[in-house]
Image (cartoon, rainbow, N blue to C red; front, side, top):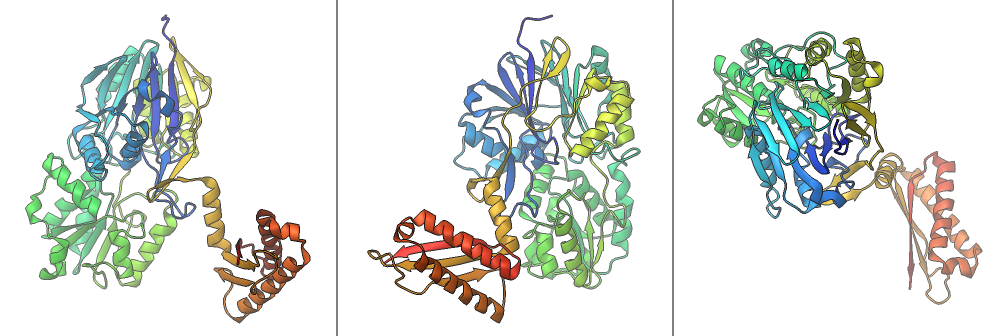
Length: 555
């Protein structure tokens, strides 16, 4: 028993979606943050570049934040770091492994005016002792090197946060998930387990990363033209496999995409990527080589519109083209929400004559997340008293909850949470707390005040178009001083559009004449009348309701 306040865990992102991973653990009034990631937008977020967790709850408590603990270097776990540093307006101590810290520093190079945090490099097996936090660093394998889990020893019990992990016992870097370390933690008694759920619906055991090497070589062997492999820019293990296959068939790599070039240079410098980088070909020099001598390693595996792969598919890349006799391999997972963009990229590449291979055709991708049977084994090793599934859509969390109960955890000791939920650990018992404010924060260029209302308006413009009605009134008489003009974009096309716009102009002209002078003097009221009248006429004539923008000017 202890008299210290309960330990509070708050979830600010990553529960109910793949991305925006962020949680806080508060011990004796001091706050530790675990990960600070981004979510990439889909077609429901027009104009949005990134989606962040909502940490407004933390801002008034910025002085209580003690440290940030990063599990690994994927953007859905570290990508929001500069925004957090900007908003908190204070330096932080940031713990991460060597590759994770290097990727963070590379991100912050694009924020030259931002104060740098105090990075502290950690390694598996370390124990961090900092203020009220005593944290063991546990080695895990994932689709990126240098991933770790954290075991927080608190006055009220032991909390284990796995980060993203899988049970690859023959990883390329020889660093498997340290099940012996997890077993020792289980022997000590894990009171609360926060564990990766992304693969919980997938039966069986996840295949080892090295299993796709032969497949890559097989496909490359049969190609007489250019080979293009698209992958995440942080997937160092996958790129190592591609480089090994390229070497085996006598091809030289061409790294394409800003983040790919940057990350591979970092990984090579730190010893995580084993290839003589001086052998790589600059994209500007590809014309000096025969196409059967090269393999392009590119970003764009999610069909991002301006990525290198999409530009190749549309024929707009500055230096690279694809066509007959070429092969494109999508060596990555398909993030939910990106399906249409990926299929569009595949179709564009196929239209140019290239053969496209993805994980639905050949074994060119394996998951970085533990599958169902892996999670069963893991739970039996750790034997947690309480479990909260994290990192996944709700269906993944629910599947993980069923695994937890099937391995002996009491049903009321398995809590399926959502973003904004908090739980309290008190004397080895876990119970729900009061929720904290949370939402999605949308980043559009340099603006981060894009809210749901604006997104709804953008979607509506995209679906139904926009109509601008300009009314010019005499400043003194408040009568029409010029004909009403109506223009539209995205609603109709052709002569029928001109006919309808003329009819709408007549309707608005009649409206201005019929309303009293007091209504014409009230600009807000007049705008509302115009919007209602025009929207009704559009809906009656076309079945659509475009966004109506009235412009009232005085002369």
